[in-house]
Image (cartoon, rainbow, N blue to C red; front, side):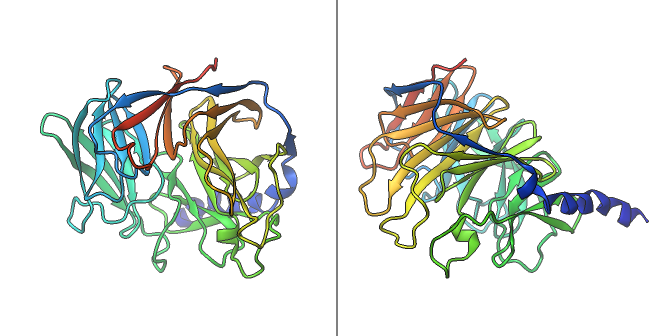
Amino acid sequence: MKKIASLLPLLLLLALSCNTGKDANLKIVRSFPLEARLTSSTIQVPPVVLSPGSMFITGNYFVIVTPRKDKIFDVFTYPGLDHLFSDGVRGGGPDDFLSIDRRCPAPAKHGFNVFLMDSKKYREVGIDATNKRLYTIREHKYPFLSTADLVNGFMPLNDHEFIFYDAPGSDTEYCLARAGETATVSFSPYPGWSNGNPGEHDLFAYLKGSTARPDGKRFATFYAYFKRWRVFDSNGTLTHDISVEIPPCKPDSEDPRDKYTYYSSPFSTDKYIYAFCRNQKGSAPRAEETELQVWDWDGNPVARFTLDKYISCFTVDEQRKTLYGANSDEGNEETIFTYTLPLD
């Protein structure tokens, strides 16, 4: 009887997810109330920022994740950005980081949490500035999807609920898992927008980046090949479906030379969602500026900024109204770009 009761929330979610595509209203956005071009300032650091994958702020520390280096995490003071140490060995030892999820680690009380894809372990990592090291506080191995090789897009909503991408071959985009339960629930049927390669699987046709609101009540999904994004509540119900009809907004193409890449790198706070919109045609050279879009959690446009540099990863300190960013360009190994955001 207890086992049946524990599955009731998951069964309810499954029932709700069947209707998510019909119940949410489509919102079309053709302009932003605030548009501006922002000029960067720079902070010089030691030449340790090699091919940064992501960055985040946790307490009094600023951390840059560099998956290609032998030591994955570069730890700085915050707000000063003085380099303290690099640690997190990319290896197979008990405290090593063999295969971390590509998503940005989640800030935690003593450091950060990170998902290890190869072992399906969720690890809480502490920062020891005195001894210049990272250490494992605790970790939990999840029993779900025991037959799957990888779990991709693992994203915590809170300490016991997690979202990740559904398996190839599934008709749905996401799975919801709860700590202590082996059952997972698939939700959000693929939306059927694609006119591209008929042989391409939906998992790749609808390549996406997701970000969870820190309070765990919602999460947002931004699509790479469609100028579209969506908001879901913590039960997996689609609440907002936004189509951005601001040029360029070309239909999906089978020809990779004509295929546009739009959204990447979403980041969110309880107030706003920040996302880069690349507007990149497959055959065109990379733009040397970056479009940053800012939205609220009801799908309303807030601002569209043109950043004067190409930025590959970023984070935002909303209290300081500052965006920090970096890229992998040669010569920028010592540079963090900062932007003052004119937002309320």
